[in-house]
Structure formats: C-alpha cells, structure tokens
Length: 214
Image (cartoon, rainbow, N blue to C red):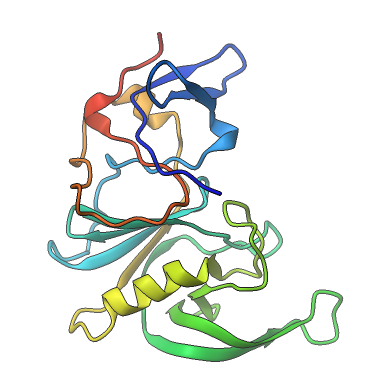
C-alpha cells in the first residue's frame, strides 16, 4: 500500500504547496506523502549515542535513530486536535507488551480496548504512550486521544529495538515546517545506509540531493 523512496528536488507552487521529485521527473504533491527530513537536528539533552525517536506531528511520522543514524521509519496517528499529543522531549518510563486502555467514561467518545500491543509510556502528565493500533489503518492522519498510534509491526520493532537498554528511549515530539528544507538545503545527516531498515510506510529525504525552488 505504501512506498518508501527518496526525494531529489522540492519545488513550491504559486499556492504554497510543495511538490517532491521522486526521480525521472516524477512529481508528487506534499498532501500525498509524509516526508522524513534527515537534516532535522538531534535534540539537546539526548546523549550522543542514545536511541531516540522523532515524532513529527505535521508529517505524522516516527523516525528511530541511534545517535545521528536513522535506523527505522513509520507512519503514525497522533492525537486529534481536541486531544493533541503534547510536544517536548520525553523518556519512556514504563512499557507493556499488552495492556488494557480505556477513557472518557460516560462520554460519546468513550473507549475500551483490550490487548493494546507494544505500549511504551512517555508522557507521565497525560498518560500518553507509543503503541500499536490494530483497530484502524488510517496512519498518516491524526486519530487518537493523544497517544501515538503505530502499525502493530512497527510498534513491535521499536519495542524490541529499545528493550533492555540501560539508557531510556528518548521520545522527541514536535511539529515540523516542511518549508524549512527550502531555506536551508544540503545541510544535515547522511542518508540511511543500504542496511538501514524501514517500514514501507512513507518516504525519506536525502538532504545531499535536494535543490531549492526551480
């Protein structure tokens, strides 16, 4: 259903929409893709070699890093505007391979879900977690009560990748500006190596190959 590919050029049209060149002069409008920008800087207060994930609320993506090296990527579904996922730098403080979740009792949006897979709590103040979501397939769009929903196989990967480490898994939640790459092209991290793993959900951007508006 999804393809994972590089972007070689970006152009902004007269209406302010970005178009991405995916090779052979094949252009895709930004509304049809989720962009992973590898020039995003590593957040402060994360140790140099630590494992951390970037949750981008604009693109609805999660990218896993070891230090500065991208190792995995996935689409997500974060909180709806009524229940936004809080931005900031967090640490995973509790995890369950399966857990029951419920909320909003007595309200029209009441939910009760058993066996939520690969749950990793990171926002103590709101009880917010990364977790698999088997009850929908709308990844790439906001859908949750605040948690970061992931396809179950991607949540499983992040779970096992980060399990048992002495350092906590850092979770950086932020909202990107897709036009930043136009203002500062050719600066950032190297593209993932051929051995880097990734979900087939989404795309990544190689900053070494980006040109500005044409």
